[in-house]
Length: 221
Image (cartoon, rainbow, N blue to C red; front, side):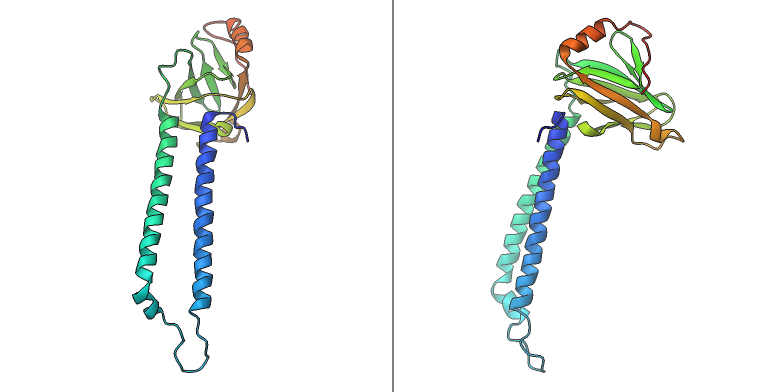
């Protein structure tokens, strides 16, 4: 399956790893419960003791089983933790040194998003970027708390008044995507949407060269 951004690819890979681990562990536990329930169940309904007793099993073999399970779980949790931190590091490490990176300021307001390009032009409700190019976002808010998110790219960052937060993404598949606010910010929160257009680099350059510098036209999503 092809994902629209490297961040989405890593996120789904990590999700599938957790899902696989959860399924394997759950199936193992259920299997062991069934085996033990069948093997050590009582064979009589009278007053005599069951043929197999938990105490006998504990003395002979279960410490080794328990030790093996502890080792397996330790390795599993270490692997999951390492994978999780690896994904977080990838998504949080801003590629500032990439010469082709596009820097865009994002300003949240009740109830919309304003995008300011390096030439000073601003668009409201629409963000256009070239494909296969790192896009670095400088995110803030002019009124209340908001949360900038591109669900398809698995990108999310708080927009806080008086503070700059940074996020980045790289669109691999050209197309149209939705930008949403994930922080309850007032009666218009549900309609606080914008459109992300990932364009062919040449088409983006043509569009950008025609975009007026300074106060640009505003496109409302």
